[in-house]
Structures are given as C-alpha cells and as structure tokens.
Length: 247
Image (tube, rainbow, N blue to C red):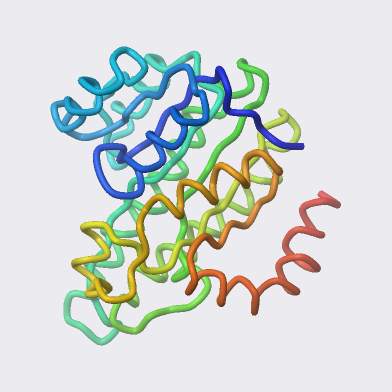
C-alpha cells in the first residue's frame, strides 16, 4: 500500500539545508499542500517561506528536546507524513579518546530523537488516517565505516528501531520507510570528506518519493547505496521484510 503526496500535509525535520531542504521542495513539487519545516532556528527557512509562501510553515524543533518535539506535534496536528531527516555526525574512530562521548551524543540525537519523534507523531498520524513515517538512516547503518565508527553504530541502532516501528505502526495503517543514502553533497558530506563522490541531495528526495508511492520499506538512492542495497537485498527480502509481513 503506497502513500500519495498530492494534497497532503507533511513535516520534515532538518528542512533548512541539504537532504531535508531537497525533500521539502520535492514534496511541494509532488503537490503537498503544506510542509512544516522543523528546524532549530526558524529564521533559517525564511528563504523557503519567501519562495513558497504559506505552503512552508517554520516550526522550532530539536531532536534532543522532548518539549519542542511535543510542541511541534501539537502545532502540526494536521500532518499525515513525517520525515525525520535531521541527525548528527562526528568523525570518530572506535579507538579515539572521544569515542564514548561521540557515541553518546550520536545515540541521543540519531536514535533517541527518532524514538521521541515516533512517540509524539504516531498518534497524530493515526488520527489523520495512518499516513507515513520516513526515517533517514544511512548506508552506514549496514556497513560500519571505521573513521565514522560511532556514527555508523548510531545509524545501525536507528535502523533497528525503524524496523520495529514498521511492525508497530502497521496496525494503525502507517507506512514506514527506511532511507539509506551513501555520500551526498551536503554540509555533512563535505565534513566527512566525500566531495569527489557525493551525489546531489535530490537523488534522495526523488527515491523517497517513489518509495512512498510504491509502499516499499528500504530505499537505497545513490550509486554507493545501491551497491550496498543489492548485496543486502536477499537478507532484507527474506528475513527483515518477510518477518515484518508475518508480524
């Protein structure tokens, strides 16, 4: 069962730049009636408001702040699509003296934030007919990159939670989608040193839109991600998705 974007109301976390901005604009292009731009600094989406008018609504948001997340869910009580794109990355190998601190920081944001978003918005999505929840995970959720060891671990945990949410929210008619990008041309990608191989953020938005329409769970949008996804396909289809179908 797919999700049709035309005429719907969405919320995108981290919508002021990079993948989040591309997703917001992609949803508007697909005919979304309105998109809440959930960001730490609402002034950072002033340009989007200028361009799209009242179809873009800024909302103060922070994945580590439960009060702001609850407040956003109350403000955006008309949403049927939530895209949790925001996240953090540190370049921390496992043997670094900062590894434990980095892991705690990334787990709190990338995993704790996802859980908080799901808890706050699941009732909203249910009240609005089920809708869809999209989680931006990473190729690093399946393959640990040693220079980003703690980030990879946090994304693997977020992917695990996403699998659980797929099963838990199925009963209320909510489609859950797990997106696993590789190197993307964003500020985060630049900081990670991926400039030479990074693909534009629109490839993530386009692949996510197609996944929503078709109702698929796993999304591998770019060339590197597709390579990981192709190798993972059999396990995903016969274990992860089959288990979900039986649950």
